[in-house]
Structure formats: structure tokens, C-alpha cells
Length: 90
Ligand SMILES: [Zn+2]
Image (cartoon, rainbow, N blue to C red; front, side):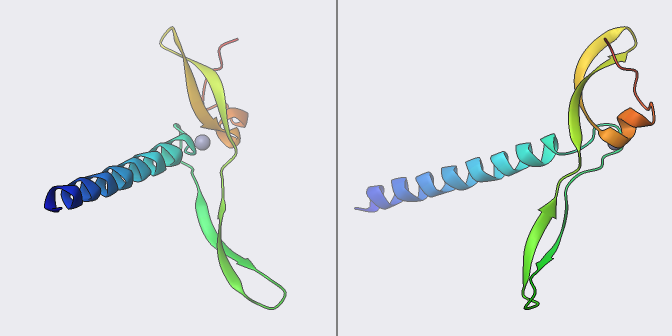
């Protein structure tokens, strides 16, 4: 029985590890690699003034960027694209 319990705890630990890894990946992909602009949080406020948490995602686009002669696909926010902070590869 004790071994069974040990296995169970391991599974739980694994699941927690996976969830944290997933969260990290999601956070990474929602960030501009130029200015670091990312997700911000706040409240959704209903007409009855009930507050629930919500998130705003930055407008991140995956673009081909040329850097020192090499072309790399990079996640950049639309503001950085517009203000020519990167050189786009065609
Ligand atoms: Zn940016």
C-alpha cells in the first residue's frame, strides 16, 4: 500500500511540473522579444460591480527578422514592427 501511495504522489508531482512548464511556455510566446511587452491583468467589472480577473494579451506577431545576415522567425509586438525596431526579411 505504501508503494502505491508513493506512485500516486509522483504522478501528482509530474502533473504539477507539466502545468508549470506549460504556463512558462505560454508566457514566453506572449511576449515581444524586442521590448518585452507581454500580458497584463486587471478586472472585468460587470454592471452589478462584480470584479473578476481578466487578461489582456499584447498584439504579438511572428515575423521573419533579419539580423547580421541571418533570418530568424521572431515574436514581435505590432508597435515594434510599426516603429521599425526590426528589419523584416522578405
Ligand atoms: Zn515590442
